[in-house]
Image 1 (cartoon, rainbow, N blue to C red):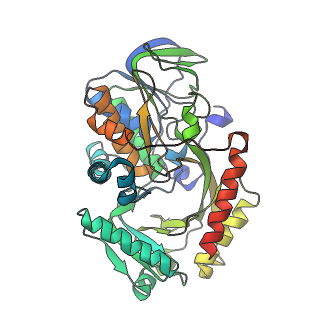
Image 2 (cartoon, helix red, strand yellow):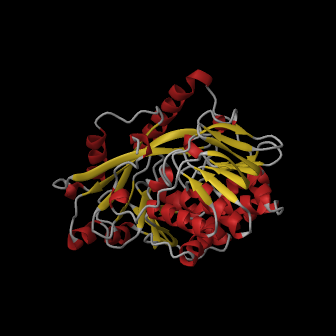
Image 3 (cartoon, rainbow, N blue to C red):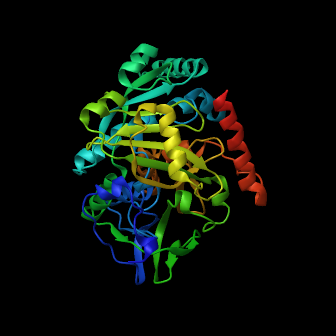
Length: 425
């Protein structure tokens, strides 16, 4: 296997369930639907299509879950990155409320998919938003009030003492607990989705990078080794789409994100750092996020890169970020540090739409893809089956292209610097 086809070394890879090797595409084949990308989005679309009786072929450039789906923080969040009030200014209050209900359905769908197909991925409920300053707590109170107005009543606002009981960090002034959020092992979830797809009759071809996409009346995906002709396409390349589909990649920006796994802390010390088995993120724009593992490590996410290059001295920078939150871990080393690309949109809302008469895409989940990719795949399957109302609801969210042309990357880096300075104030 070529170096580029292997998964990055991570705690997820070292604790992964058994892999199935799918052969590269060889020759020409036909399908009802061809799917580009074997991450969460492509696999959930393929699964729901196959369960509806469609013949589906998935092409993956490397391995199932090789991209962000197999190496992200595994965190399950409620709602969207923008507030429902903000989304309401784009699509109107009624459609915004419907989009809220779809985001709630996304969490239920995730649970149902894991249960129905027996996916062993450590699904665990419980999420903590951590406030570092008074304006963060004001934002959390506003978020809680909005969620309550939409029927999500189970959250709990925590003061500084209550937060300190749960998280052993001196940094936080309070937080918000959401019992419906949570976390899972993302690579095992992707591998489980692929197994469910195969059981439903989906054909998956790994190590089959697509070199040409035809989104016309007779859609097709072409690789160096063959071609899939189909009646419909699903484009789910996300941050790795590049320039493959002209114009589409300009609506998202790839952002490097990074995670470290500590050595084993032991159960007693782990509980002093994080009392409960919940996922945590702070409220900064360039945020830290973390959770504990079943073998009592801390998975700690921090840092971002808009340059497309891994920061120099990444392990040192990650360690500095962790010790800023947990100074008591100064004697703890990292066993692994890894990263990858996620895609963001200008407005941080997911981007779904059509290109041509029978080609559908979904990307730009902006850090909230563990749950939202599932509902995206589901509504794409509905649309291809002739029930496009819910897909069209997502497609009504307006999206802009990232400005800058050749200056796009420097502009994004300057924007990140501004937000970092704002986080420090």
